[in-house]
Image 1 (tube, rainbow, N blue to C red):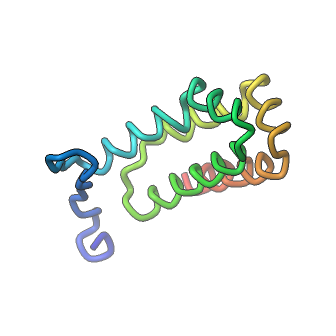
Image 2 (spheres, one colour; image 1 turned 180 degrees about the vertical axis):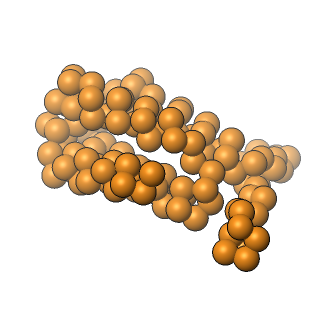
Length: 119
C-alpha cells in the first residue's frame, strides 16, 4: 500500500487476551510493549534472575522492532535511541547482558547499527 499511496495504511491490533476484544492502533501497541518489556530495567532484571537467555531474547526483540519499523513505519525513533541507552550504553546492563551471552550482545550492536543506517 505504501508504494501505491505514498503512506502506510491504517494498522490496528486486535487484543483477544481478555473476555472482550480490544482494538488499538499498532503504533500505541509497539510503544507500550517496547517500553514495558525491552526497555524496562526491572523486567530485564527479572529475566536475568532466572538465567534465561535474556541477551539472545532482547536481540531478537530489537530485530522484531526493526522489522516492525520496516513493515509498518510506526516505530518511533526514540524507541531505538532508548534501546541503545538502556541495553548498550548503561555499563552495568552491558556487563550483565554480556555475561549472559556475549555473542548475542554483539548481534544486538549489529541490529542497532542497522537501525541507525536505515534512519
